[in-house]
Image (cartoon, rainbow, N blue to C red):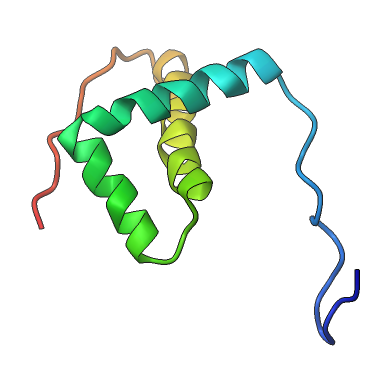
Length: 86
């Protein structure tokens, strides 16, 4: 594989670390959430920006992980946000 000038070869392979079962569960939960209008709107917005389907799914999966880690850190319970209207 050739690279164009000014590019780096770092990061060309998918990360293999972490808990596979957790990654899969978060990915599948984000995929299932596409039935929710707010999640579908977020997905469609990412796709309109030129992201692939997988990249658009990884965004809400990562957001879910961030919320799950923040809850015990801050000592709070989950409170769903109201969706932003465009």
